[in-house]
Image (cartoon, rainbow, N blue to C red; front, side, top):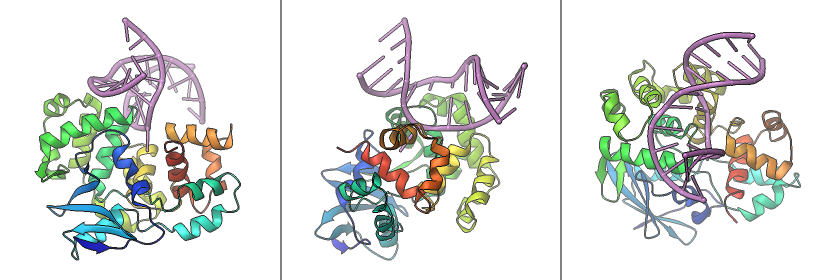
Length: 268
DNA sequence: ACCCAGGCATTGG
DNA sequence: CCAATGCATGGG
């Protein structure tokens, strides 16, 4: 096992909590305290180590991917300094010190995962997603590679219904897979342009686009104000406020604020 | 048997 | 701009 130090501060248990919170995850598989994840076709194992993580195999391809997976790009120091001025957020950041919101490594995976999570509970979405991954993805050790865009572009609606998608979501997923849109190039565009390109697709609304900005592109200002769980979390911490407007209060750390409020409402 | 859960498109005001 | 409606599944 090779040692890798993500940006500090860093807390492995808090950062990986999301991979365990909603039932088993075939793509980010948790087994015996180790996170298993397929990167570029190979299984990578990630375990806690003093001051960082042990990664196997660690090379020029897996290292940067693992850092992103563990939320490396987020500016926690800046966030904590800013949050110290907010009487509600300050204790939350102290309690969750070192929590880095995990990032989706692949844009197609991020969008399909968000589509599956629309409207239903995350436990339900996870169960359906796991069945979809087992049918259309490929196993590599303890983890599964998420189904490729090409594979889902060729999927028949009936196959997707069989793993539990609604007819509408089956159409959304196949439509996205077949769409004439280079998902990797979205990373070069500003937030509102990314949202415009994505919401032009059937089945992708503002909520889905906001989570794509937040969890795949790590955009600091992403604020998924329509999210039901975020609405509850904001109500818990700030009372009866307009969640959409409240985003301005958290500028320029809306994304980290959303993740910290959500995790704080989940983790004792 | 209900009811709700980290939405969206469609239809009709 | 806003309200109502159907959607498929998992967990309580």
